[in-house]
Length: 143
Image (tube, rainbow, N blue to C red):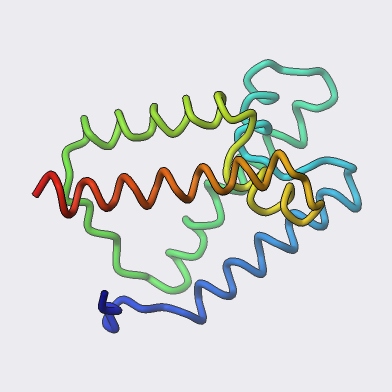
């Protein structure tokens, strides 16, 4: 395995991880809620009274932050070399997996593991294993 040094971005990746960790800690400390994006989306779609406002604000922030960063840094847009159909199917499968696993990678992998949740450990191990198996199958078996 070789590292693609042209696209290796350890500092921005570290900064993003720190920001996600800070957001998860702030939501838990100040709101008493776990930062699991699939749960936040689910709650926003169901419109659970007082809960709707902060959920909508969080989701709008998820969309606004990259747009604001684009205005400041003008990053190179990612190259997506698959069809929109395959991308949509992949997104639906991720959503189905998050529902099936009772949470997404942010909920289990960041918040659940930090609380030493055995269920989150198993879920995260499953996410990572399934991702590795998929990459292996698509790159080495499917050609």
